[in-house]
Length: 117
Length: 117
Image 1 (cartoon, helix red, strand yellow):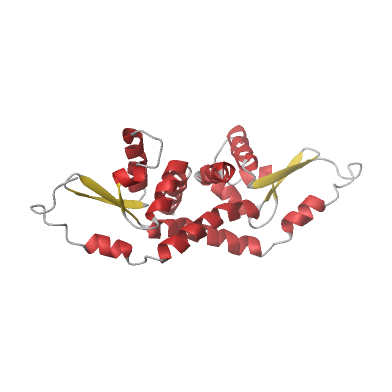
Image 2: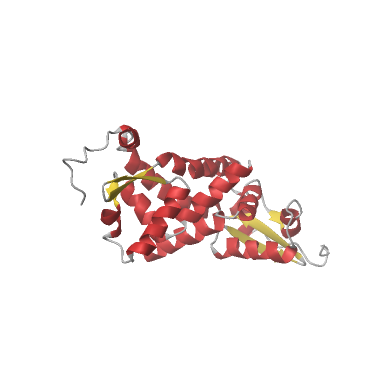
């Protein structure tokens, strides 16, 4: 369970950055080289390579070097890890869809008869 | 678009922490007070309140104080923001389901005829 939680933390952290999400988004359309991925982004190559490393470390992408060209590919099964977590949450909250509305619209309890605890 | 990207970054950042995910998970079953949420977690109250603030700032939860008791509720629509992002990715990658297998099993190009670029 700790491993699953660590995986979730790593993948959510990786996706918290817009540059890394742009890479995931681009690789969803097919493999691309480092230079193809970096070209549309306003970022230095060393900084970009750190983002690639973060994505590779958490398994969201894989890379392969051929000669001097490194090609990246998305491993969509890793996105499935957080998809699964969201699905678990969804099953839980769908059992109580009206909860928030009830909370927002509820009258506060009369303070004179409800002592604070 | 920048606002949407900022929202995604904030929500992914919030969910990158196991304590904050535990709160989201618990609130998926219904509203709870701060003390009910903190009780099962091995964490100081000041630290826990920072996590609550992070969740509140990105809109994943709402809180309401009545007397000395603060009650928290999940706003599941905010989880829908990243659910929507994942759905966009899914549509993209499902168009190329065999991509990773092809990448992993492909023979590297013969280096004698393929100069590095």
